[in-house]
Image (tube, rainbow, N blue to C red; front, side, top):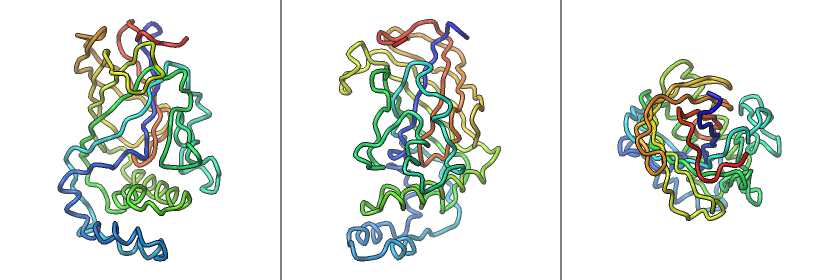
Length: 266
């Protein structure tokens, strides 16, 4: 394990939930009305929330959902004390979002604009497609969409939706929530250029349940390109932060290979 490729990564939470499947969207009966009302500044947020309704309590969302992904760090970049469970923090904590995002930081105090906390140690990015297995509550969907749909929401309101989503996910204790197919794309030494095409990738697939820090998952490598071409086997994924799937999740992944990307800080 010591010589294997070990990386850390952070799900960019605000990007999650941008693209839902057709079945989920069809259950959002008043989404267009709320979208229009959200742009009327003098209508109170509480009224906007009440106008958001679903046609049924549980939504069978067994379909693909786009996940934004996030930065990949070299091993030992993110410390355990940076990964806090959102349900164990004071919502009034001025650093609430950063503390529940591990290796992300806010730009200009905007909760919807998060960047890598340690840019000099970024070795790539990952993207993923998620497929839910469990029926998701309307409260989860509402709180997830709420963080993106209403541009006039304050930081406080976004945190409230963040916590509500975490509470809903906790109800799924010990249940499989989703299947994720993720591609980890590694940069070359020109790591400062975010538009640089990735030439070395590893793609894997894994299952998720609601978990706590230190929980270990096994995944399967589907393949790779560049220096990782032909890579096979199982990889392990360790949670560094209890996730809520509407905010960020920080994790450590160990791939069964001694090959390192071109740019891998010590």
